[in-house]
Length: 329
Image (cartoon, rainbow, N blue to C red; front, side, top):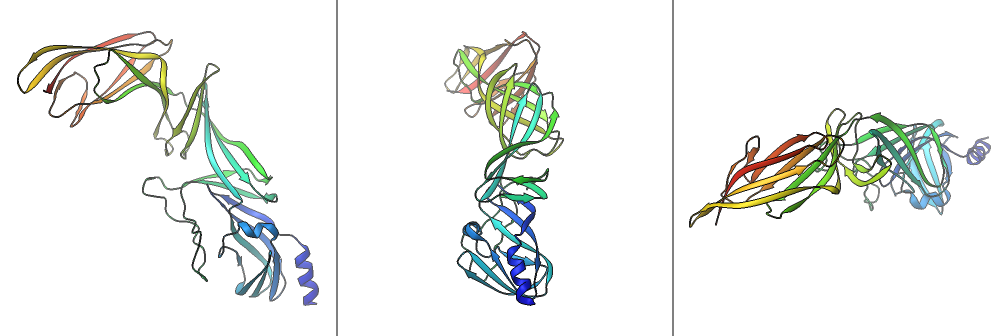
């Protein structure tokens, strides 16, 4: 009787119930019905993509696992319903975004190698986790770890609709929202005396849902503006994305010497921006100077290394900043 049950169990394939996808691998849980004492899992080619130590039977007390080619013999105490759990490097996922006419869409990109998976529950996790390539013998693989120090927001989890995952790459939108982005122009870096200064174009908006780090593609008025990296942003916080040099807007600067001594020189600086667009923009200025320096720029926030200033310009509006700057000779 037990032999018949074992053969029946071998004939019934395990179906994935829960699939959690990470940037470089996935955690898969499959429901199985176990005969008493022993069961053979026919993994096939999939076994080559299952990191050693990650294959487990949950719901019974394991006593032994024997790997025989592409099959695994489990010996255990118990029987009946259980869960086969493993990590799988043949499936990975990432998040990316599109921003078009003020509508932000979050997309999942899932890549699967090997046979299809039935995911009754599908979760996408964005953020770095630890996957040890060569664990010590007999030590279970540690799959999850805290996010690295460079990411203060930890892991981002997104529940995706249940679906059959097919081999290849699948892209699907899973969250959408109107964000009404604020258009930005930015000059940042060391102080320069060039007559024409290029500006960087970007957007700023409040995160309508948690935003995992990922690439964002921006389109406005049917025109592709570029791709940029969206930083990790919790819901309700402000996200900024920068798309590279603006093709139309630039600063016009003139510098005139007012006085000088053996130790320092004072200049009059004029910085002018004409907003070329039929909509408002926000200008962000952030420049650094040689030490020591003195700056007389109303409205600017003085910093130990320079200043920071934010200005709003209406459609087609022009603004000129005139100020004094004293630098060491």
